[in-house]
Image 1 (cartoon, rainbow, N blue to C red):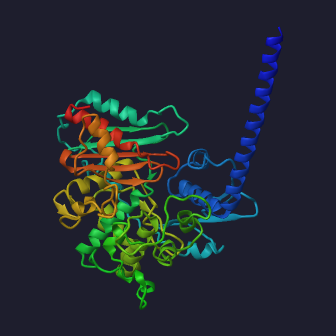
Image 2: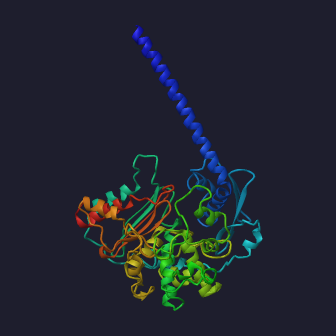
Length: 478
C-alpha cells in the first residue's frame, strides 16, 4: 500500500511538472507569435490586403475562401472590402492598416503612401485582350478536342495512382492542399484533376513560376533585337565609376548569380522578400539599391528581386505601351493562354517574381511551348536554343539545380529516383513557385506536368518523388 501511495505521489508530481512545462512552452510560443506579428504588422497588413484584393477582384473568389485558405495560417486579421471602389483595407493591429487597389489591366497594388486615386489612374482597361473565342478551337490553342487519337505507351492504372498520390495528404500537419494537376503527353491531356471548389476555368497563382514566364519574355526581347542576354545590365545606379555592380550581366541575373545581397528564405521580420513586395512601392527599385554580398558570377543565391529588376529593364527597353503589351501580344495570345493575367507594382512595373495568375491548362500550354523548344504549332516564339539555355545548369549552383530562371532536379532528387530504379531524364526542368506551384517539362519523354496548390510556406521539395511515380507509368519501372 505504501508503495502504491508513493507511486501516486510521484505520478502527481510528474503531471505537475509536465503541466508546468506545457504552460511555459505555450506562453513562450504565444509570446513569440505575438512578437512576430507585432514586428511584421505593416508587412502583414499589406500581405492580407494584397491577397484578399487579388482573390476577389482578379480571381473572382469569395472573401471567405481567401480568408480561410490563403490567409488561414493567420490567427487573426481584419479587413474591409469596398466593392464599388475595388479596394481592400486590412490590418493585424488596428493602428496599422494597408489598402490594396485594383487597377483594370494592371491588377492589384498597395497604396503605401495612401494615394488611392494615383493608383487608380494607372489603369489600362483595354490592355488584356479578350481571347474567349479561342475556347472553341482545338487543343492546344483552345479547349475543343484536338482530333488526334489518345496517345498510347503508358500504364493508365499507374498514371491514375500517381495522380491520386499528388492529391493525397501524408497524414502530417503539413498539408499539400493540391488544387489542380494536368499531365500532357505528346501534346495531349492524358490526366486532369481538380480539388473541390476548383475547375479547369479557375485562375490560380503562379507565384515564382512567373519568373520562368519572364525568361520567355527575355527570349522574345532578344529575338526582337531589344537586348542580348550577355549584355551588362543597363542599371544607371550601378554604372557610376568604381561601383562593383557595373559588371553584372543580364545572364548573371537570369542565373541568379549576380552577387547582390538579397536573402530569399529568411522570413524573420524585417525580411527582404516581404519588405520588397509588401512594404515598397517599387520592387525593382528596392533591389537595385542593394549592395553586393559576393563578386558577380561567383556565388549562386536565389532572389525574387532579381526578376523584378529584369522586368524593369524590359520596361526601359520597350517603353510603357509596348512593355505592357509584350506578355499579352508576344506570348499569351500566341499560345492560347487566354486566362493569363499579370499584376504590376505601384510604380507600374510588372512584378515578374510573383504575380501571374492563370488556369492549370494555360500553365500546361506554357510548358508545352518549352517542351517544343519555343515553337508553337509551327511558329517560332522563342529563339532557337532558348529553352535549352533555360535548362542548362548554372555553374555556381552547387546542387546543379538551377538553369536560367528555370529549376532542375536536385542531385538528391536524382539519387532518390535512381534508388527506386527510375531515372530522371537529363533534360528535366521545371518552373517552381511558393506554396508548391510546379510546371515540369521533360522533352525527351514528351511530358509536361502541372501541379498547383497551397502547401503553406513550402517549395514542395518532395515533388520530384511524385514525378518519378508518373515516370513509372511510362517506363514500366518503379
